[in-house]
Each structure stands twice: as C-alpha cells, then as structure tokens.
Length: 147
Image 1 (cartoon, one colour):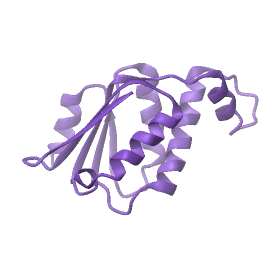
Image 2 (tube, helix red, strand yellow):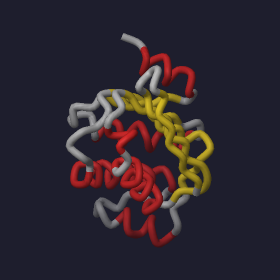
Image 3 (cartoon, one colour):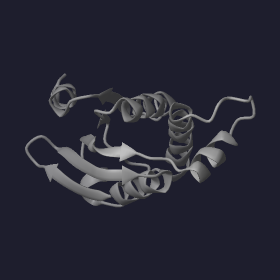
C-alpha cells in the first residue's frame, strides 16, 4: 500500500492518494495517518483518491466482519465491504480528531470500492462533514471547489 498527502494552498484542498491492495487495518492506518497531519486537519477540503487502490478482504476478515451480524447473510465480498464500511464509520466516530475539513470527496473507480465508500459516506453523514463519493477525481474536485 502506498499513501501520499499533498495540500494545495491555492484551493485549501488536501489531496490524498492511496494505491495498492487494502485490507481493513490498512484503511484504519491511512485514516489515522491523515488525521495526524496538520496539512489535513487544517484544510477546508479533502479529496481521498482510492482509484489506484483495491479492497481485499481475506477469509479471516470476512469471517470477523460477518460476525458483526448474525442474520445468516452470505459471506460475500460485497457483504464484507458493506460491513467494513460500517466498521470504518464506527472507527471514524471513535478516533477522528475534533477538527476536520468541512468537505470530503471520496473517489473510487472499482465497483466494490465505490460501493464501500458510498456505505461509509452514509454512515458518517452526521459528523458535520459534507461527504460525497465519486468515480472520477475531476468530478470530485468540481464538487469540492463549487459553491
């Protein structure tokens, strides 16, 4: 997994690029790392670019995630991604700093990753941060820099 963070002083937008295969613990580590950086917490906008990343959950993670519910739901990759998004939202609620960008755009090109980010955005909608999910960085930047 690769991760880099750059802040554009002209737009006050922090660009995070995440690449490689991500397991659940990798997502948590990326969030912690970004939240610990001043250039992220002081930015007004943030673009999380996951287009070069891919969620991969091993059997152990799928089993653990499936243990979050007990309704007999099949242990599929899509279900694991949904449960991972819920777990990341819980992680965000517990661990996030008190100051965050006011607008956050999440960009994911792959269907599974895009769906996971949509579920995550739905769960964090109440945290005083406008969060939207996009398939292309250009669309995300348009929303971030718009009115």
